[in-house]
Length: 463
Ligand SMILES: NC(=O)C1=CN([C@@H]2O[C@H](COP(=O)(O)OP(=O)(O)OC[C@H]3O[C@@H](n4cnc5c(N)ncnc54)[C@H](OP(=O)(O)O)[C@@H]3O)[C@@H](O)[C@H]2O)[C@@H](O)CC1
Ligand SMILES: [K+]
Image (cartoon, rainbow, N blue to C red; front, side, top):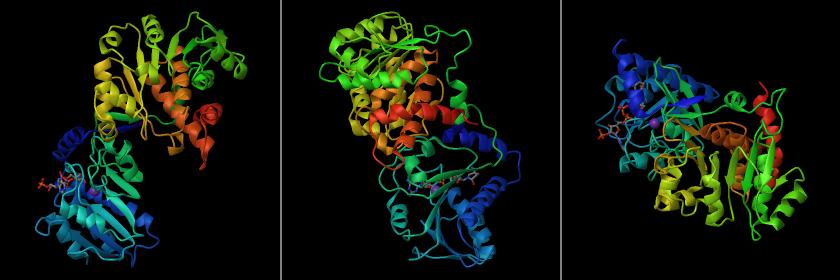
């Protein structure tokens, strides 16, 4: 499990540790890790041209001390301050003592640029003096962000205006949520963690890894029959959109439930059967429902009355009543994309895109449900446990029908007995992995994602 911690939590842990260590120890540890990463990215440290963008706080201090280490190994290191009157004094002295220099403008050429403008003390969009330096980063230089790319909000991943686009981010003590959540995540490049010795409490966000997913996958026992493994009911599709039902069933058949039941118009049932003859057709007992696309209100209301877990997706999300959902006794899982989430919250779509973390939390609170917010970084929140950030996926997943496959898959995992957050985050993980496998750099369509699910399932179980 990759875990991430809010600024407040990191600061508290730092304070606690600093009180027990000689002054400057943590910054020395951070700078040593940063310098080592930079050295590893250069073909040769000796003679390399390194530029440090230096902010007024301790993030700038990290960059200056790291620069001093690299200068001692023969690199030509130039520090460019955001505010010449405010640079970490100890860091500046170390750099100058090691032969580094200070310049007022960013040199036109560099092999590597260290972004030490802002770390966890950054607030709001980059001020003009910082944005001007970022604009001047020489093309072709490897960009290494200290702690996080400047301009990215550490807690949320939000970016207002300009922000550094790093090739590598060397983060200190703990991952910050903004490094895992877009748009911040896409600015961070490869993220490396430097252990500075912090003792941390429960995380604010977490990202599953293969082993976590493998541990959550439903496993049939010797005594399992199809009913014990769970039946998932799919209420989706219409004469106008029969494909949604076929794709949801495709996902559900690969999700570990013992059987998939389709409930809907006869013509759609025939389309489902033609593709998947193993589907049960018509009403009957299920352990979880997926209420999805192409639906009228009355079909959704019937399903929501059933005291089993229910996943609500697509058209099923339209006009949902928070009170009615809160009154349910069994878990509810909502799987909106940004547009649907915006409608559920009564805000603009851009607001959801810009503040994905706040949006998913607000939805979980308001509807008393687990919420899977689809998008460039899929988030899962049940309002209490840490938010789960999905680390798999590919931009090619933005294709018609892929959401139907995901809802079938997650519903199947619910029927197999997983909790709402586990079903949602395992489904998102497998779905993203399957899409990566199926796409491998080329366009893909939703059926291919469904077909690649068994391979993704095997991948995560391979130690
Ligand atoms: N604590 C520790 O033990 C350790 C900490 N470590 C390191 O310290 C970092 C945190 O340092 P920090 O607290 O000094 O804050 P930091 O990120 O440098 O920025 C604050 C400065 O930026 C300014 N500023 C703010 N927003 C701005 C904006 N939008 N645009 C422009 N400027 C803006 C703000 O200005 P002000 O508001 O004061 O005018 C203030 O001067 C942390 O990320 C890690 O790298 C490591 O060494 C490990 C040990
Ligand atoms: K930075």
